Structure formats: C-alpha cells, structure tokens
Amino acid sequence: MAVKKPNETLQIDALKQGRVTLRLIGTTPLYMNSMSAKAKRSLLIGGGRKTAAEKRDIKHDPETEFRASMYRQETGDTLLCFPAPGIKAAMATGALETPGVTKSSVQRLIFLPQQKINIWGRPLLKCDTVRSADMARTPDIRTRAFLPRWCAEVDIAFVSLTLSAHSIVSLLSNAGVVCGIGDYRQEKGKGGFGTFSVHGEDLGDWQHEWDEITADARDAQQDAYDNPEYADQDTADLMEMLEDERLIRAA
Image (cartoon, rainbow, N blue to C red; front, side, top):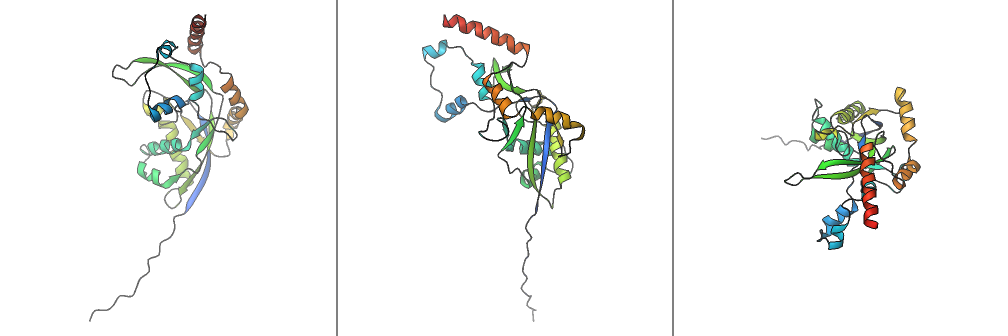
C-alpha cells in the first residue's frame, strides 16, 4: 500500500536589497544630448513643408540648440541633470567586459531610485562638424552643451544576495572606462567623451577636484544657460561668421 506523503509547504524568502551612494568625477568632458522640443514636436505631429520665408532663414540657431541640448530640472542643487536609465545602461554595457556577470543580470538586479541625477559643472556652447545619418552622410554643424569638467552623485539599489557593494563599484567603474555617458561617448567607438572615475564619500586626493566642480551648481549653470560662453576658438570663429550673416540679413 502506497504511503501518503505529508503536505509540504514551500517557503520563499524575499530578496534583500542593498544600497550605495557613489560619486562620479569626469575623466573626459561631457557632451549633453537631450532631444530638443522641436525634434519632439516633429515626432509627435510630423514635420510640415517649410514656407518660402522659413527656407530663407539661417539654417541653425546655435544658442537655442545649445540650451535645448541640456537635460534640465526645475528643482534640486543643480540645473543640469542626466537621466538615471543612462547610468544603468552604461553599467549593463560595462558588464560585457566584466567576468562573472551578464548584461541581462545587471538589468534585472540593479535599480536606480532616482529619475534624474545631479550634474555639476559649467556648460559651454560648442559647435562641431558632424555627418548626418542619410545615405550621403551629409556634413552639418551641430551645437551642444559641453562640460569640460563635471561630476555627479548616484544612488544605486541592488539585490544583495547576488551582488555586493564592491560589485556595484566595480561595475560602475568599468562602465566609466568602456562606456561613459552623453553624446560621442566612449561606447560609440570614435568618441571618447563622458568617461568617469568612481568614488565613495571619502574622496581622498580627489576631494579638491570635487569641491571645485561642485562650486558650479544651479546658479552658475543658470548663468551659463542665459549667457553662453564658447568652448573653443573654432566655435568662436563660427559664431562670429554667424553674427556677420545675421547683420547682413537684418539690414
């Protein structure tokens, strides 16, 4: 006669989360690359045909494009910010170069409570020659906010049964080396911008660097937003040519 097995209750323990706050200090400059309101409008309602008057307008408005490229927030210690998912994506990419962890596991086991992370540093107006994504790879001029020096602070939660605080520091450090954040970043191959080093609250020899960069907080960034400064001589030369053309057309 078969013996009836006793009822067994399956006990499942909840996953435990750890949390760590880390500081990022840029090792190469940061290009901001927020999508402009004009581009979003075109995606939402489509781009209509240009009128004859619009076709006569100067093609680019660098000051407007500079401001539109910034990720901004209404409140907080800084005017500038960066989307938190961009940091998580960088860590997932960094996992590809990290033994013992996979990209998919990083995407599942790491959570950034913040929607936006504060970015300290003074943005400058920078014009660059780029190639469009069309078949002919048409050259164009693109204007973006450019931060020669920058830093950030990020709060990261993680599943502590699988990952440790040391693992998070290593993943983020690897992301800072092989990926970076922002436009023309290291991950893209040709670029080398947006890379960073990772630190805890005790910055050691980096404390002076952190203090200098964080001095450019909301007020300094608002001033740079309202009164753009040029990042280099090439940009200054282009803006001088643009001003001359504006005066000619206004006459």
